[in-house]
Image 1 (cartoon, rainbow, N blue to C red):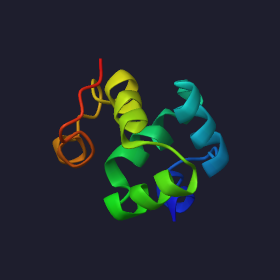
Image 2 (cartoon, helix red, strand yellow; image 1 turned 180 degrees about the vertical axis):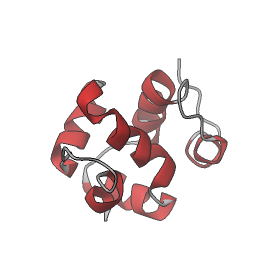
Image 3 (cartoon, rainbow, N blue to C red; image 1 turned 90 degrees about the vertical axis):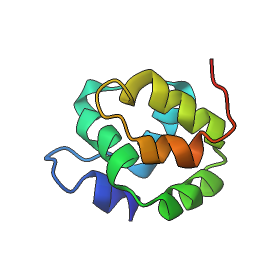
Image 4 (tube, rainbow, N blue to C red; image 1 turned 45 degrees about the vertical axis):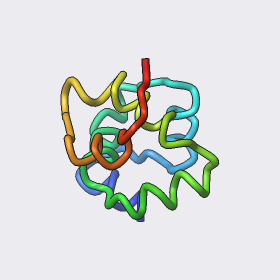
Length: 90
């Protein structure tokens, strides 16, 4: 579901494994900017929670990535409220 959603409007393909690697390493690859932005704006939160569990990622890690690379261009207050409640990320 994640790969289908994030790659729906792109020619190049971002695998779930590569997305996980970028999230864990705090890397942003311009080649996959649309897919990364889609992840934070189009993927249902329930699917994101399953993704986090499956790949041993924390909400704090995800929120830090969002604030570092995504928020400036595609702010998502609903995402912030869901994943950032009570979390302070410097």
